[in-house]
Length: 322
Image (cartoon, rainbow, N blue to C red; front, side, top):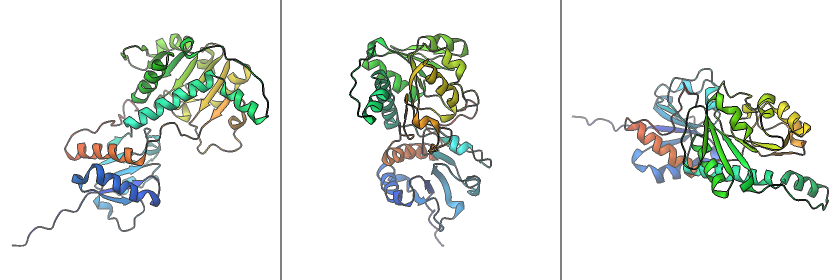
């Protein structure tokens, strides 16, 4: 009697970091999930049989490509956001897993705290003075303990940012669409509570997901509800901010500064006015990208759960939009 042929290992396709990163991805998956026997292959490997592809880990997949894998079980985002996947008009109706890791949370909390302290100490002015070789002493009006931070969005990243700000001494609050409870954190929920939340916020940190409701949420009307001299940090999505309204609020003096890490168009075009605004610090979508090793660890956890018939952590909810 002929023995059955051994089952072929499930293929995991990677589209993140290019061909140069493949060896690191393979080593990391072998470290964290050798028992899964994954065949980790490059996105453009011509020798991969599309029928063997069960999982993909991707950043900005080409429209229509994901629909070419008939046995695909799940799509894993290489980042916390999934809008780069949802942009595909031919996207198959499959589970999408967001890349949220402990390292992501730590990096985001550190970045937002750094940004708040830079705004508190008027780092845009310091940078401008250095560019002019100008020695002009000045003091800033408040300490962290006298400054009210408000975090828009209390998911895993928003909570991490809020906790770190509170630990340093900022008077910290958070806002979410639905009620939250967090020890030591004033929590506001729902549209009706947004004005009160904004009125008590000196530094607004946006960590909302991208949904139809959040597009251009940070506009002239919202900015008017912040106290005069407030500042804005956007590390959510570029679509959250109406840039002309933000720049107008800065030019009028209503806002004192901004740190912007995400934009509608990335890379940000060289001709964009925001590059040259003296009250804005532009960073290149650098707030919280975890290492490949950490992303492989989290992806391995998700794949193991799905192969075992369990829901993976940080599964995207199409109804909620995050």
